[in-house]
Image (cartoon, rainbow, N blue to C red; front, top):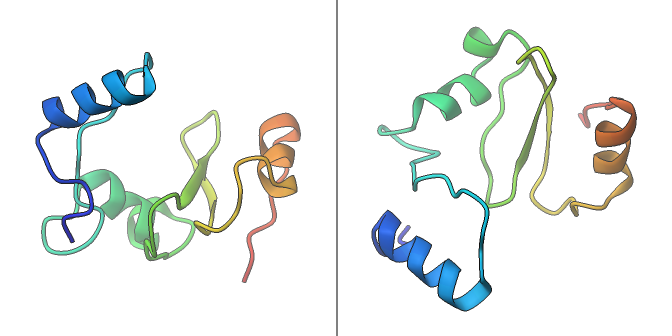
Amino acid sequence: MSQEPGTNAEIKEFCDSKYGVTFPMMAKISVKGSDMHPLYQWLTKKSANGVLDSEVSWNFQKYLIDENGKLVGYLKPAVKPLSDEVVMWVTKGQFTQEK
């Protein structure tokens, strides 16, 4: 939906100059549709990840993957990064998937 126009290099330059980004940035990929990136094919299909089906609803959807590479669940975009759900997952490895 053209929410991030520009090439990967242009996006990186913008983030570097506007926000001083110093961390590595992922390349722009498709998360829906016929050209969905293989990572999102795995994240969204129970037949691939063995845990659950999901659909990417918007930016900032968070997928939780444990230290063994197993999908544990996901959080909807509205869940803030410092929410209790995220903090409990990061600090204690505890997570309960919303239904």
